[in-house]
Amino acid sequence: EADIYQTPRYLVIGTGKKITLECSQTMGHDKMYWYQQDPGMELHLIHYSYGVNSTEKGDLSSESTVSRIRTEHFPLTLESARPSHTSQYLCASSANMWTGELFFGEGSRLTVL
Amino acid sequence: RKEVEQDPGPFNVPEGATVAFNCTYSNSASQSFFWYRQDCRKEPKLLMSVYSSGNEDGRFTAQLNRASQYISLLIRDSKLSDSATYLCGGSGSARQLTFGSGTQLTVLP
Image (cartoon, helix red, strand yellow):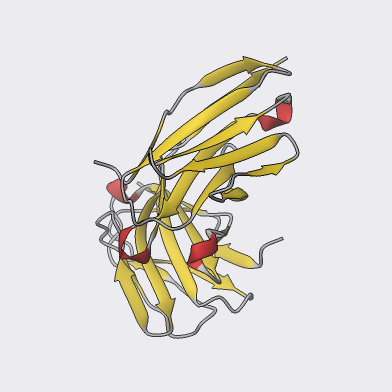
């Protein structure tokens, strides 16, 4: 089993609120990723990090921000949530991108009213 | 054009059938390829990596064709439990892992 954890699993929140989705892994992986996925739709990479103090934006433009102060922790923040942010957010980590093995968390399902 | 494209399906097959999925990629510099399985409302999990020589794991066979830039997944003797969405992917530009949109498989009793 992968040791990567996301909280909260489910969040229903009102428009304009600030939210932080937590992601932690205990595998010592340098590389971490955030994907956004709507039901039945493809995964979109929104942020990634190759190590502490390294963050990059992914293919899909997102109003969220991330930080990587510690290797094991890669939180995602939305300063002002909107209904268009309603989606599932999946965090993943990998030791070596070239092997293609990403370990995914169980996801955080966000609903913004 | 998307870096990785796959037939979304759905594929509805009877139990015991053999089913094959193809996936094309546009970045000829991609080095590694893989297939993931995603169950409904669950996270994706690695099914198998894809090597140039092809690789097999039980009822599953994955192959890579660099000349035509596609990867394939063959499932033999399909089981009800194989019903899921199958995602293909490769190492894309900017050292990111890029996924296709997924192919939905339903194995019918």
